[in-house]
Length: 385
Ligand code: PMP
Ligand code: GLN
Image (cartoon, rainbow, N blue to C red; front, side, top):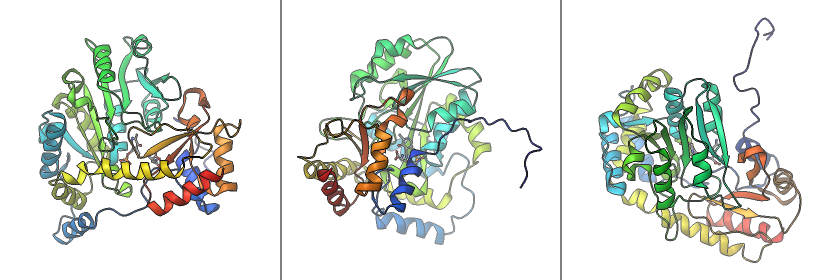
């Protein structure tokens, strides 16, 4: 097809292929163990699958209400209150979305105007910057320091000005696994105090935190909650990334603007899955058991790679673990990851792609949302590198 009659100017001209697609495709091509892209290689709870099937058989196959079905929004509001002590009105303050990605894109579309600045902490998950740029905004990138990615809150504050429309945070953090502490959240709250800045808080790994860490949701901090979109993903929580189901919570005034974009972006989200999730979420154990479930996997994997030449600090949250390979080679992390998938039969994610200016810290990310068998096979290879 000839499109030369059109004068196309890309809104996202410098977009490389997603590292998740690159590595997962290479894993297939080389028949390698895929611990790169973040998804479980085991199935969701059969009870949840039965609930979806039942919803379809019961006839919930037409459009859902715009913001989502009330019973699901209600049970989400109850969950947030139970865990974080914050009250959201199910009807006006919670919206069901097509995964967290759509919640994030919609919040950005609703509030970011051309030339507005949006603070992004690097390394960052890949969906924030393209959404800001597609809406005419300017991503202001702040690199987190060291190999453990701490926030220097004085430096953060120095980046805020009258053009700052929004700040995006992600805790527990992909790719580093770092969990913001209470003092991080208080420092953030202090920095944003007396401003009109909106906070987009990506909390898709809220139910995966380890050891003595706790998830500090923005909804727990009243001054943050009053300016925040808190985004969540059922894909992460219920081992069903392919369902692309999520939600966000925000004060009514903000949610009203969000829904104006949501209406013309998707209108509403998959109905039978909402019915099933509304039922399944009534049992808090279904999400409260997730941290011990993944902590066991993390520990199995880390014990199995003791004695390897990789260095690591056990991850605080998420189902990702960073591995430092600086004692193995000087290669940059992308070359190293490409070599591992081709020569060693293991696919992982190089961290530089998430860093400001592609800074290479000689770290790779592995995903331990895998069966014990896969984790032990992967560990055997890692030990041999
Ligand atoms: N944010 C982060 C930090 C993620 O890792 C992911 C990954 N999947 C998403 C958002 C997107 O979530 P969803 O698949 O529900 O769109
Ligand atoms: N969130 C997943 C990860 O970090 C990937 C999602 C995607 O493939 N876009 O690996």
